Amino acid sequence: DLTDPTPSRDESELAIEGALRPGSLADFVGQMKVRGQLQLLLDAARLQQRPADHILLAGPPGLGKTTLAMIVAHESDRPLRMSSGPAIQHAGDLAALLSSLTPGEVLFIDEIHRMARSAEEMLYLAMEDFRIDIMVGKGAGATSIPLDLAPFTLVGATTRAGLLPNPLRDRFGFTAHLEYYEPEELERVLERSARMLEVPLPAGSRAEIARRSRGTPRIANRLLRRVRDYVVVHGGSATEESVDAALDLYDVDVIGLDRLDRAVLDALVRRFHGGPVGLNTLAVTVGEEADTIESVIEPYLVRIGFMGRTPRGRVATPDAYAHLGVRHADQSLR
Ligand code: ADP
Image (tube, rainbow, N blue to C red):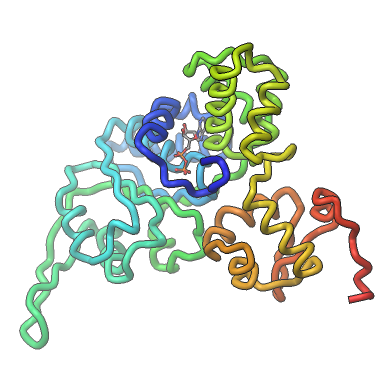
């Protein structure tokens, strides 16, 4: 579903996404700085024959965090175990996971900011000393039994690094902040994906999809699949006209904003006269979770200069007014 920024990814979508995932750092497009940093980290670990330091990957959804975790495991020739914050609701869940790791295994925890607090505390010790304390019994008779773990590399992913408690953040040897991609980089992602999906994609069409992908490889790949669908159904080839028609059908506007992006801007501009307005009020107005607005919608709108964050709340910029075709109200009249 194109209109949903955090769609529940169904099996087939996941399978296609998996197939399009680059398998090595060399194939990973963009994020030059992060790639260089990761490369050094992995090379050093390999030379010293030890597991790499723990790695935190921060950034909006779809920018390649899971892909990088897979690459870390692959490049260091280690098995990968995947889990996620929401799946770790008790310290016991984490204890079971950690105690079953084999030496050197890479443990990926997606959405690590959503892990239970009690598990977080267990993780501190595990990351630092490869050891956990397991509590047995209750009340006065409770004792803790120390348990040694196999050394491992934790790769945590979060859309909101700011939500992680400091003691947890501090235990990562390296934090990578993933940035939105430039259109030229998305073109390279699309070029590779089009080849793999066997969709002939002329340069102009590729550029057009890249421009409308919100700086996000996952969205670029998804739009490409919708264009492919369009061509399959309507015949012809992936001309710029077909790209236009397909993306319009899915409410992706000329600069790539989707329904929810526009709903947020629209509320900000029309309903709240440009703000400032609090995040929660904005979320209720558009009927979306505050967390989604803050971690998915806002970062991109801020990045393209349509929205600002002030201590008193969110504000719309003149560019946002222009995009919506609304005249910028005279501030003094409010
Ligand atoms: P995240 O975990 O940050 O939500 P993923 O790693 O699942 O994002 O990436 C989403 C999709 O985008 C995958 O299909 C992946 O192949 C593609 N992708 C992400 N980053 C890149 C990149 N730098 N180069 C090529 N493809 C990418």
